[in-house]
Length: 195
Image (cartoon, rainbow, N blue to C red; front, top):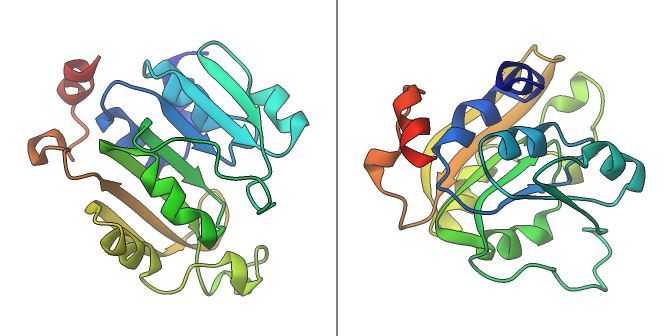
């Protein structure tokens, strides 16, 4: 699959910010069939693609991708990753609030957290509609502040693509991520400098 096709399959938010990540291991949390794991692997990251669904993980498997079956909501099994492990962590269309502190601890000091999921008001457009799976207004911003992450970009509102939904999107970094590395114009020079 070409880089252009990988980017087309990925969320535009993830495709925009993933090239800013420093070289290192990546985590695609609740990866589903692995569209973002494939993008991260194409960017040169060794990827851990984690999900509880073995069929989804079979689809996510590929070069540079290690799959891991794990039930994030079980609660009886401890978080499987050590502190500071990942250069980039991607989460899309998934929310389990109790995991956020462990997730952030697993981010390297100069790592990126790229998060995109459904927000309050989404019940007007379909699933998910359970408030437990919908972010409160500004919640990702508050989580970033609570965990001493610096926000590079944030959005909170309506999107019509790929379907009508209310979403929040965040790209935040650890303290060791230099401001000049946040090349927000999406220039190719930023990507080339990293790999």
